[in-house]
Amino acid sequence: MSFESGSHRVTASMNIALRLKATAEQLPNGRAVVAPVGRDRMGRVAYSHVTFRQLDQESDLVARGLCQLGVAPGTRLVLMVRFGIEFVSLVFAAFKAGAVIVLIDPGMGIATVLDCLEEVEPEGFLAVPAVHAIRLQNRRRFHRARFNLTVGRRWFWGGPTYRRLARAPWQPFEPVAMKPTDAAAVIFTSGSTGPAKGVIYEHGMFNAQVDLIRDQYGIRPGGVDLSGFPLFGLFNAAMGTTTVIPPMNPSKPAKASPARIVEAIDDQIVTQSFGSPALWERVVTYCEEHQIGLPSLKRAFSAGAPVPVNLLERLTDLLQEERSLKESWDELPASSRSTPPEGSGCTCAEVHTPYGATEALPVASISSREVLEETAERTRTGAGTCVGRSFPGVTIKIIEINHGPIATMERARELPAGQIGEIIVQGPSVTRSYVRRPQAEAEAKIADPHEDHDLSEPVPFWHRMGDVGYLDHQGRLWYCGRKSHIVTTAKGSLFTEPCEAIFNEHPRVARSALVGVVRKPQPGQAADQTPVIVVEPRKKQFPLRNADRQKFAAELRDLAAANPLTLDIHTVLFHRSLPVDLRHNSKINRERLALWAANALHGQP
Image (cartoon, rainbow, N blue to C red; front, side):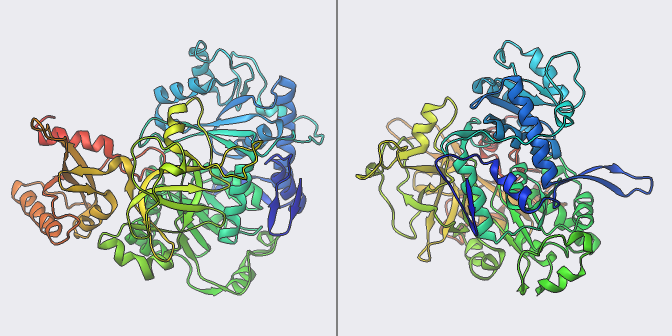
């Protein structure tokens, strides 16, 4: 393995954990992970932290312990511990041992989690005591789980504890040599638009993700990141960025305490932060109500669902105005200036909204400046949401919408700029397979073999994002919704993002969702859907009286009639709080909402 300035060269043998070792050599005393551990007698937050050298050595000790336990390359280990120092250490320890880490969001519910894990057939659990207790209650489902480690107190089962392994005398541990195509992790999709699927991540894909994110955003060693999404904590360790563990449950960002998030940002002089739109909405509202800013932040990221233009405007206003980075660096205490700043000269704090999916991350990105100056007005009038240009090395194409498998690219018809179709992507960080889901793979991947293809290498392919959109004449991608959420009427197809934007312009609307309710076809007719717009009013704006409801609905119908995109949407329903996905608490669960709308229209409870 070798490192070159500005890039990472992948050789035939590699292990993504070597990125941590390189960081530990370059920044041995830099803070790697900082975690809140309670409050002192004065009410101040107390923090625990490890340096990059400590994190590397601690993960060495745990990796050695796992190997002595019997863990071998390819062993699948479920990781279920709180996002914190042990979480990051265990991931890199497993990588070093050649094991495959299985990550799943516990917010999906215990029944779904157990079903998904059974499908993976794990060979061990790295988990807190409560998870081990559940494992034992379901021992028949997890009969292969022989390699188990407890984070916390071990109760009545075998296996070592994290503390015992991590407190052994340190000796260097050489990470197991892996190929770029060897599996490193299984990460489950959220299941918000279909069954949760285990996505296989390879060492080379993780490696490419680190490079793409670092280079796209100019991330340099010395930054401090408060990450609302655990995966970014792993990227940070490979980029020399400090990870501050947010005081929240990553599975429930919409319930996070904004006061505690702001407190952590101020305490640790956080320079960048990732959060879902739901999290940023809470933080921004809190800051507005208390008339405070976020002066240390140089960049903020938001993803998981389209970020409303209004939220982008408000979040951008909170971030620090243009100023000399050198001046702000000089203002920091000496203890926080152990490494050079992330650049020099003038910079302007900005919000970035990367686009991607569990199977393909990252794909494209756009800054708040470009949105607010160039694309926001078009979004408001129904053009969809611009998610920006592709990352270097990632290729995006738009093909004709097809709801069945596409075996090869020869059977796909590419569409010209400006025409809505299905989004497909290709790139070094795009995953190639699921765990035990051949049908899902057939539906999500399109083979693209070339005449000069090396038969010893995997066949090149495209990933179908499951989204629809188009490329404009500047090469920017515009997102128009999920393919499965297209409402098919007798007059044609309606796409969620463009249509909803029209209704969202009403001052009393917080957000809306377009769903289709299936009508029973007449003999000899094809089945179609009735388009229904479900509106979540702003706070204290819900129409309680029938007269107010009818007036509100009439105003929304007038908006619809004034735009050709929404001309045929006549049915309006009101919902107090639209159901959302579990992972980001931002993406509307239209499958569930469509059932609610059907029941509401048919007078059922």
